Each structure stands twice: as C-alpha cells, then as structure tokens.
Image (cartoon, rainbow, N blue to C red; front, side):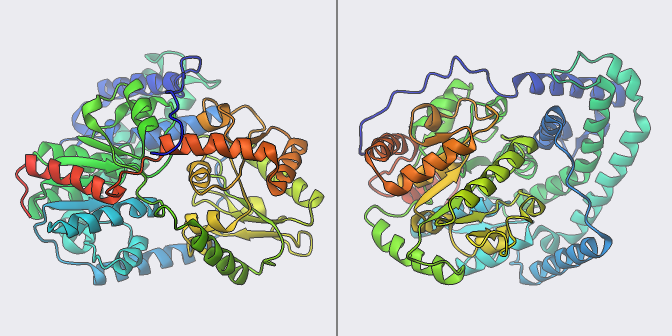
Length: 525
C-alpha cells in the first residue's frame, strides 16, 4: 500500500450504534417464543427471528426516529409495478440455467453484490474451478448474462418446493397473528429505549415479522434445494446480515458447506456488525478488519482481500476523460461547466427522514445560490423520488439534473465519480471511493446524525453543517486551493487503509481465499 499508515481509529468515545435497540429486539424475540412456541418460529430448521433480525431492527429504527411510511402508490401505479415484476420473473424463469453441481456458488441479492462477486467469480474460473450463480432477483439476470454467467432461478429450478414454501410462510404468518396476546407479551418486556409504548412497538414488530415469514420460508426452501442439488463446497452470499443471505448461510452450515461474504459497502460501528455468521468475511482493507475485531468477530473469520470494484492503478485519467464525455452527452451537461455529483443513500439505515429532507432542501438552496454550477443528483435505490419533484423542474432549476436509480445504473458509480468535479454525500461508501479516485468529497450533516464516521472526524472531507458551509465547501472544492490539497492528502492516506490493493489483484486474492475454504471442505475443481 502507498501512503502513510494510519493508526486504528479510537471509537471508544462513541456508543455502539443501535445496541440498546438490538437488546430490546432480543428481549421481544424471547418473549414471542415463550408466547407462541418454538415450532411457529422455526421454518426448516431456520430460526425466523434470527433470520429476519435485520428488517425487524430497521422497522424499530424507523419507528424510533419517527420516519413516515412512504406514501402508498395509486392503484394504476401499483398494478403497473406488479405487472412489470411478474413479467421480469417470467423472463427470468425462461432464462434460468438448470441447477448443476458446482464447487463454488455465488448467491447475490443486490446490484452492489455483483460488483464484487463477478470479478471474484472470473478469478475463480481462471484457476480452473467451476462456479455458478443463483439469484431470486430477476433484475440481476441481465447483468450476470452480460458477464457471461447464466444464473439459476430458484422458482424455475424448484417450482414445487418454492410454491409450497410460500404457502407455508403465509400460513405461519396468519397463525402468528391468531396465537398472540400482544398485551400479555408487552407486559413482560422492558421499557423500550425510544419514545414509544411497549405495545405499540411490539405491534409494529409483529406486523413486520408476519410480512417476513413468507420470505424466510422461500429463502430456506431455495437454500435447501441448492445445498442438496448443487452441493457446493463453499457458498458465497451477498450479505449474511440481511434475510436471504443469512438464511442461506445458516442452511449451508447445517449441510457442512463453508460460507463467505464479500464486503460491498461501508461498515459502521453498529451493533448488528457483531452478528455476522459466515465462515469468512472478505474485507476491503485493514480498517474493516479492525472494526469487526472490535465488534467481537474473531480475526480468523476476516480476510483482507482488497477493493474488488476499484479500477487498476494508473487507469484514472483515461477513465475520467471517457466518463466526462459520456455523462455530458447522456445527461445534457455542458462539458465546460463544473458540476457536483450528489450521491447520498437516502433516508433509512443511517439517516432519518427528517435529516434527509433537510439535505434535499440544502441542496436546493445551494443550487439557487450557485447557478454557474451544475448539480447532478443520482438517486440511491432506497431514496424517494417524490422528495425531488421541485428540483426536477427544469423551468425552476436549469442547473439541476435528478437521475433515477435505474437511469443512473447505466453507468458504474466509479465512472460517475471519475467524471465529476466533486462529490457531495453523507456517511456513504461513495465518499471513500471518491477519495480513492482523488475526487474532493463534501459531506453534509445537518442534525449530528453521522456519528463516528472516521473520514469526517479525521478531516478527509470538506464538512458542512449548514447551507452556508455547504456553499463555502463547494467553492473550495472547485477552486482546488491549498486547503483542498491538504484534505485530499488526508483522504488518500485513509483510502489506502480502507482499500487494500494486493499486488496480485483483489479479485485473485479473494478467489484464493474462497478456494482455500473450498478445499478444506472437500471441494475439487
């Protein structure tokens, strides 16, 4: 690695985010098991509360911040969305590969999983080992096919098992609601760590649990069939903290199959990070390893393999020239004008809805005050397009482009970063990726919600806590004066610790780690 090594960040002054909420969730889970019995909350040997802890935790987190539920779409919009989803699923079933034995199987759920799984799969192939992809998300089929991988669709490969699992999950959900005395269970719970009554919080929790039961059943059925038919030595899940990946990892472990997960986004000092269940977590760099060790994950279960999605060293200038031309042509930007990429993650896990709405309003004000700068707002998958209706009006904001998630996905995020003159974000992985590519990063926090974010605390960004500070940061970033140079120097050192670059390449290093796992579990090319 280049640059001066940084010491591990001292996070002892910061609480572990979400720890009290997680403890209350554990207590609620224990009370529910006592009330309804273990059998109702066990599907094919999978503990439903363990499998669904992530969506349950996020439901409580949203409730603790008072985040409003997204507005319900109109009937026509809901019908169109359902038809598009069913059409995509039907196409995926027709395009599905037949399941066959493979020593290494990848199971992605999100587009971000593909960014790290595809290069690793290619490196495994290059070593003479067969790989296969399984995904229940039809939207991932095209990207995998473009990479010359034909994935297996569980509903196409095992239709009867999946249909039976869905019915079982729905029946369990109905039985759960019928078997519960919410008031009795609430009376056995401690006071919640948020301003909400125990019975209200428990009711929200049970509603979410009922919604997730069919999903747990479907994931468990797919995982059981995969382990039985494809018999991998190692199963690589997209994320072992979210429902599908967690269920797959639990089922695979019961079959004696090794499990792994490739880091694909930024980790925070958060209680849930202590709950990884895979045999090996492949991390971008030392900082992630330090964090996971602090959270209690044994060192033997973490391997530093590098930033799999980063461009090769020396590729930046050619990428920047090409990307700027592509963005200017595709999104009607004047190549002679400076522009800012606004790439926040929207409201949700790390940021409240109120704060996110404040950030949108701040960007609106900044765009008014800096008409000579173009503002390109690239929406995250979980963001709400309705928050940007005013900004999307070209008659009011001629210097603003609001890019939908699907439209923005036409170009890799690293090309967006390479093309822009500066990146505006919060506590997102985009900040660290921009630092790696040498782009100035502006971070904004209007409500002191970005706690313990190392790149903010160590001065690797131009940080703003108001509209005035945001305007000053934009001016500094575009002028590229001495202060920006100092910030970029700090950012470069931090990026070196965040994204390790092994000499053989991160993809080969990750492949080597997976194949070592496979061989210790009886796998052969």
